[in-house]
Image 1 (tube, rainbow, N blue to C red):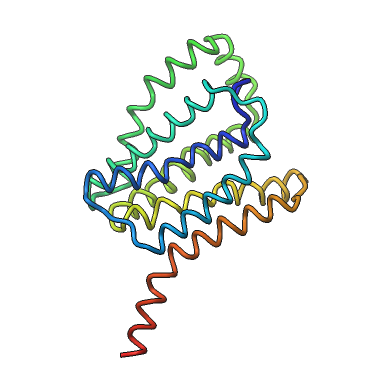
Image 2: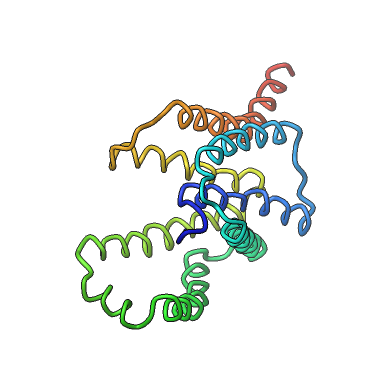
Length: 215
């Protein structure tokens, strides 16, 4: 995001992990998409495309490629969680996080340097540490444990698309906390994404209920 891709577009492109995750599930476990899911993903992609049109300025191919690689890495992590089976997902996330320390520390030393790291720690405020606590406990330990638990028990095509709510919540949080405007295109994109998710999640159970009523 440092000059190669806008934060808004980066947060959107990384959601390609949804389709990478589903593709890996189809390849590794033989999972198949149902007919209504193609329509659901078309609606969600239309919403994502609308966001991309308004956030695609000053984006380089290098930046786009890096975020797509990140999305693929996320999808591979999802598939690893699925194939781990029904295990203690909190322990799984905690121990797996140890493998992130060496590359993150190395990249930080390379790109920022020891002086910047020391200055960041010295100048950290209570708000900074609260953010770290949220990212570590709320987002990583709780959020990813729940995410991995769901992926291990339900089809990837049902769970993975729920991450498309990230830009929707991003719009809402920026409007509520930062006072950013909500133009018509943001609302339209939100409606398209929510409609796609609704079709994906609710269409199957609704059809099954209709068949039971008819019987």
